[in-house]
Image (cartoon, rainbow over all chains, first blue to last red):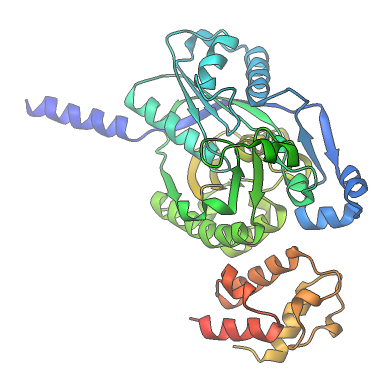
Length: 343
Length: 78
């Protein structure tokens, strides 16, 4: 009796502490690239000024009619092909986006069918933005840990450029449309998460006229021709939120792991804007060579920035298997989350 | 806390593209030539990093000059 109790406790301990293993990441980049030259011409400014304000040289823009689910399906298809994945083993699909096909059914159901995945699969849509990647990993971790699934396909993709007003140079300079596919199984690494929410800041970054509250009107459509909604951002407020919240988030997740900055091999944060990342990096006292930034070549692709950065860092030889990597997502909501993975 | 003159000169040094000689405590920072919303972020970051003071949106809305910012930092400093 006592022995079986011990065994139970051991098993409990074993199952309680697990993490996610990112097996593979694939990225889909739309063909159209918006350069600083394009923006400078359109908005009568200089490409140098645009780069100075954002730290971005180019962004990706989805083709007309190409929506979030199209991008993630292409990312997943290339993942299956390039990595010779047996897709019949995938039993949980998470689709993180704020641009869905329909109000119902869940877009992840449609993606299951389009990718030819098993029907013995759980599918969920995760309607999150900049914190979405960490949220998705947290969900994958919880499902894997509980034994409810064994292999997770986590897709991120957004089409922010379709909800930006044609005259909004600030948002046009920042956002980018990219899809990613992430294949996740469990690892024995003891992973922790921290999440936070402050809905009082929701008006500072919002896609207005996009759903039930403040629905689209004929007048609005005639005024701006934005049928999917209109993204509005109070950049100073968002900056204040990030500079206040993220350093504390970093300190809290380090504390949870009982790590110091030196124990983490690489820091990969949501690529919001270069200036914001630099302020956060300095405030957290993270050495520059451990802080991966690639916003220059990809822009801010909302929930895709972290997997795009992980993929890019690995390609550049900066990120290697076994490294301890801190991931932090923060933004629209306000919503934020962090974790440390063993890559 | 440093003097208002030193605060002004340190902050002015953060504004690339702007001649620091043109910035004084009485300067209305929104009227600086080439001013953009980016400079508001530079002020927030400068104050946060150097004086451990977090400005809020109201602080910025209610201030006009570099001295106004300095006074807010003085009043909020831990």
